[in-house]
Every structure is written in structure tokens, then in C-alpha cells.
Amino acid sequence: MIAAIKNNLQRGVQLLNAINESQYIDRSVAPYYSSIGIHMRHILDVFDCIFTGLESRKVDLAARKRNELVESKIDMGLDYFDEIFAKLENVRNENLDVLIEVKDDLGLGVITVNYTLASALIQAHSHAIHHFASIGYIISQLGIELPDDDFGYNPTTPRSKEIDINISI
Image (cartoon, rainbow, N blue to C red; front, side, top):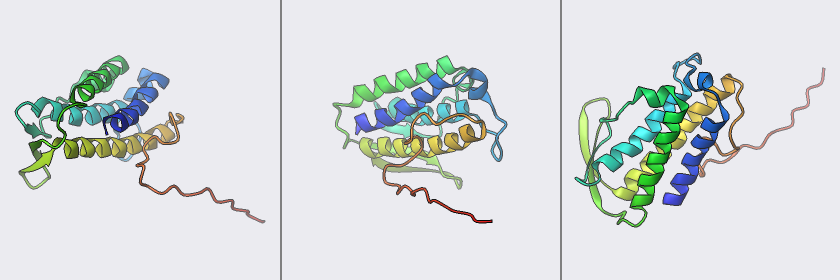
């Protein structure tokens, strides 16, 4: 599981290594006017919340760091990826079935539920894929090439085959 998560997150690193800072902070794409940097910071913040709460077994997903430097500087984003990769390695040999309390605000107030560490990491992984898909939309609007064909795709999502359409006039 850790290898799959790291493999997916590595796609974010590939993208950051392929774009420039002005592309990283560009907030011109409608409808949300969010940047690649904001999405990357948000993805990593969710993982960080898990690791921050791991020792106490109390994870607060609403207590994200929201470091604006990570949103605006590619090198800070890359450093944050490295930090999360190291923390993932640190839990590789942990009991992933350990119970943790996960607290979040779902829009109607804060709730607390029990997860296993594994389920929290799986949720963070799926969340990252979802945001990579949003980033995929942004980069397509900015004319940037996807770092690879799997960027933003959930492995369980069926791929549509390109259809040849012949239009006759």
C-alpha cells in the first residue's frame, strides 16, 4: 500500500519538475480559480494531518497547515513531497490496523469517527487522485502536458477508448 501511495504521489513530483513557477501559481482557470500549487499543498496537508495525529491516535483533517509558501514556491512544494515520502517510509512497518480517531468538518459540523491507519492512508491516497484530476483540468487549460497517462486516474476507473469519428460533409 505504501508503495502504491508513493508511486501516485511521485506523479506530483514529476509535474512540479516539468513546470515553471508562474504555471505553478496560475489561478486563471475557471470555475474555481485555484492553482496547481494550492492543490498540491492541500493534497500533502491531508497526509500531514494523519502523520501529525498518529502518535496521539487523534487525527484532525481540518487542522491543515495551509503553508502559503508551499502553494507559491515549487521548491517548497518539492520539499513537502520529500517530507511526506519520509513519513510514509516511517509507517511502512507500523501496524496499519491500529485504530485512530479521525475528526473532520463535513459541512454540518465536526464529526469524529474511528478509522484504521490503513483506511486513513487509503482515503488520503484517493483524495490525492481526485485533486490530481482537478490539476489535470487546470494544466490542460494552461496548455501543459500531463506528466503521464495515469495522472489523475483512479486505477479502478474504466478508461474510455478513443472513438474514430468520421465526419462527412
